[in-house]
Length: 70
Ligand SMILES: [Zn+2]
Ligand SMILES: [Zn+2]
Image 1 (cartoon, rainbow, N blue to C red):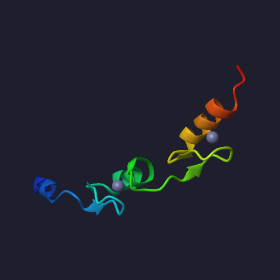
Image 2 (image 1 turned 180 degrees about the horizontal axis):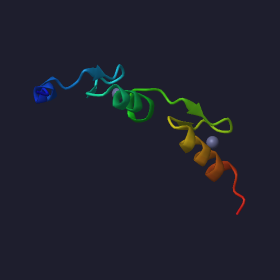
Image 3 (image 1 turned 90 degrees about the vertical axis):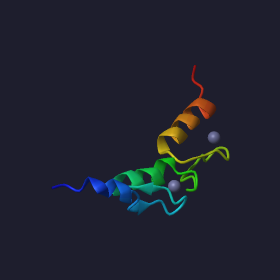
């Protein structure tokens, strides 16, 4: 028998920044890296003071704000 009751114990993994609970470590890790508002921005624009928690967003920022080819 699989224990469905484990759902009641949701939150085996908690974000260390905002204490949000996750049942899966992978989801919690993703939250910490990309979603959590408590985590500090990891990527900073070298041209202005813009910061981003996603590398992709920062690359887009640099392209849109600082490199206008069109
Ligand atoms: Zn969090
Ligand atoms: Zn910038």
